[in-house]
Image 1 (cartoon, rainbow, N blue to C red):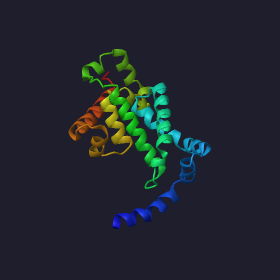
Image 2 (image 1 turned 45 degrees about the vertical axis):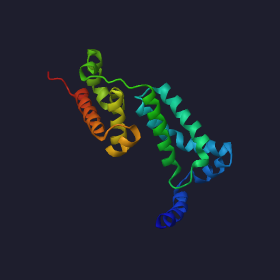
Image 3 (image 1 turned 180 degrees about the horizontal axis):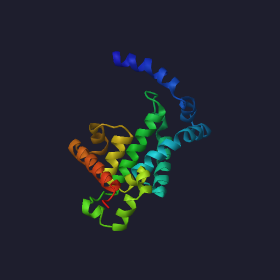
Image 4 (image 1 turned 45 degrees about the horizontal axis):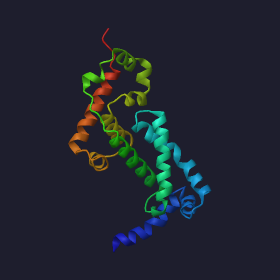
Length: 192
């Protein structure tokens, strides 16, 4: 009973704090122009998330971002204003990208294989690469990159990462540790 009262009380409050709420309501009624406004408000943060998750593969990120908005349009009637629209869309994007990455069937890359290319090592250790963290993150193995982005950038806990990826909590922690260690190796300045 309390949950029902809280939901009925919080929904209008959440809706009033959501800059996309009016446009979402119109879009739910089939107004394509309203959905275009929602798209313009939302595409930047969603594209940034997707871009990080796919390792800065711009073409793939563009495709996946568009797929997210196609899915959002198709599922818009299911949005109930229990959270901000951006939160709902963010979760939809995350789930879609994770599904795409699973379908790609991640391959595990051993540490030695990661640093086998001396030119890549030299580039990663260069001053310009150290300044561009996103570029370094994109060089991480897919699972390590995924956990690093979800934990450090998106602020998810290991149990949340486990829930959305299907990865064991211990594996998530191990991948985060691996990602951090790989990043440290990438930015180390070789002893002269």
